[in-house]
Structure formats: C-alpha cells, structure tokens
Image 1 (cartoon, rainbow, N blue to C red):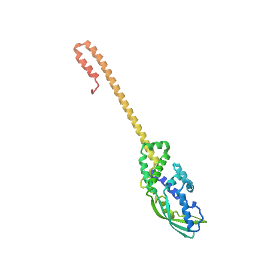
Image 2: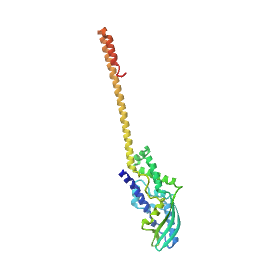
Image 3: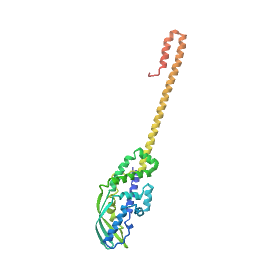
Image 4: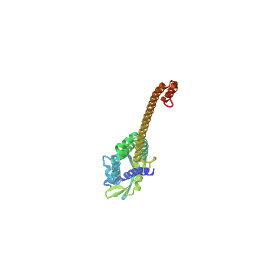
Length: 286
C-alpha cells in the first residue's frame, strides 16, 4: 500500500511543481506607474487564458515537461484545460518604490474537486475489460492519458460553479519590468487561486495506474487459466465416463457369451448363470 501511494503521489508532485513553474516574469513590460502594473497583470492573465497561443510550455521547467511527457501527458493541453474557465478582476493596485501589491478576485474551477471526481470515475473504470485493453495496447501511458481525459471532462462539467478567491499578487520591479516576487510563499494563495483555490490534496487515495492495471491483468489471466483447467477437467471426466461405459459393455458381452456356453453345458444352471450375466452387464447404480 505504501508503494502504491508513493508512486501515485509522484505524479501529483510533478503537477504541483508544474503549477508553480509558470513564471509571471516571462511577461516583460515597461512599468513606471499603477497603469503599467495593471497592464502587466492583464498581459500575464492573457497568457494563462490562452496557453496554446502563447506557447506557455516555454515558461515551464524542461525537466517537468519531459517527465510529464514520459507519462503520455501534454503540458500545454493540461494548462489549456486547467485555465479554460479562468477569470479575474483587479480590485486595487498599490505601488511602493520597487514593489507593488495587486488585489484581485480570481475565479476558476477547483482543480482538487475536479481531480477527486476524475479519480473516482477512473477507479471504477480501471476494473473493466476496457481498462485491460488500454493497458495491453498502450501500457501506463494509455492509463494516464485516460485519467487526464476524465479530469478535463470534469473541469468542463464544473464550469458553471467556479470558486472565487480574493488574493494579493506581490510584484517587484526588475529594471523597466514588473515580475512576480521571488518569495513563492508570498504568492502561494495567488497560484492556488489560479486553480480555483486548489491545495492539491485530494480526498481519495491516489491511484497507481500501473500497479492496479497489472493486478487486474493478472487476475484476468488467472481467471482464464482456471476456466481452461475446469474445461479440461470436465472433458477428462466425460472421457473417463465413456471409457467406463465401454468397459462395462465389453464385460457384459463377455459374460453373455460365457452364459451361452454354460447353458449348453448344463441346462439346470441356465437360470442362475443368465441372472449373473445380467447383473454384470448393468453398470453400478443403474
């Protein structure tokens, strides 16, 4: 169980790292006053709201991209789905020298809720024959892709009830540009709000798709083997029964011949030997 949870949580750790790797500093704009700070925020959210058009994967650590790709996952597709229903509203901006604070209301589908629902659906699905087929055809990557397909669907299903969070975005001046504070803890609530306030601690135990699929596949193979064995046993039993009937028939024929010979030798014993032959020709229990 510990191994299963550890392997399941490894994927979640990648996701958290991915979420925090999106850099606000990638949007460099000349900023000299409150207006320029607002423009920086607007342009940053424009990137979030159109990951594919802005090649957001370029802002993510290449190691994370590689690891996700190894599991058959596409970074841009994930971010596009995660931010598909993201909205925001700037409430207030305060500039103090080389730092700025932006008060915002950020709304989006809660990724925790969507992932919990997807994991539940996936847990039911991977026990089916369809899951075994996907695993045999595509291995672990196929199962991970299926899980995230379910996640993307759940995100869309929850679009009508997004979570809204009031947060503060902390910025610092870097030359002529504004970017996110180096202190990730300062903006932890902001990053969480981008995903509907997700904390990335799901209610359901994480699913280790590789281990579950292997167990299910083994169970299926064992069931098939047992069925074959039972079939073979039944065939052997039937063959044995037929053989038994043949032996009984041969014995009956032999005894009948002996009875005829004996009857010619002694008419007085005819009734007794005929009865014996009849009893021998009848299989036990009939």
